[in-house]
Length: 174
Image 1 (tube, one colour):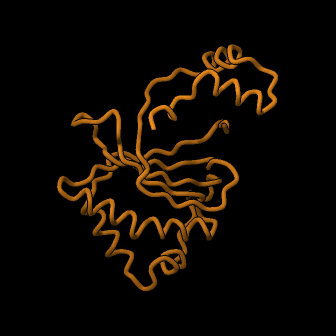
Image 2 (cartoon, rainbow, N blue to C red):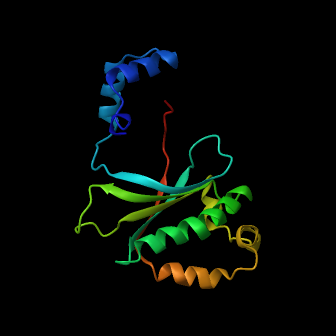
């Protein structure tokens, strides 16, 4: 629901009181405005998620922006959900990563955007990003199914247009 995307002033005041923080809404807005410049916003709809046992957000996210091949979007999403969601769930269970998510661009959208989906791979440490995947995670998720064949097929359904590493600097919980 759209009204859940932006909390009202009363929602923020309630959260401040609930957290027992000795601040006013005005001081939080002033402090936030002094520390950041909002340069863009985007809205994505979750299509699939694999989550480990994380107590807080991932310190690092690898953001993979992709463009589905025209006419292959449904097959691309089905492959992510069928093969890669269980694989990343197994990776999270083994402590290789924290979480994974597949999101579809909702707004802004149109031909000027190079991507229509993004996957986020969440990691607790920088070292976790560079760990090799043991074959046990794929085997746990899919038995003896050939990873390379599945990976080759999904690559035929989408094009990677951008990959970035984001580092979490701070977060708040409502």
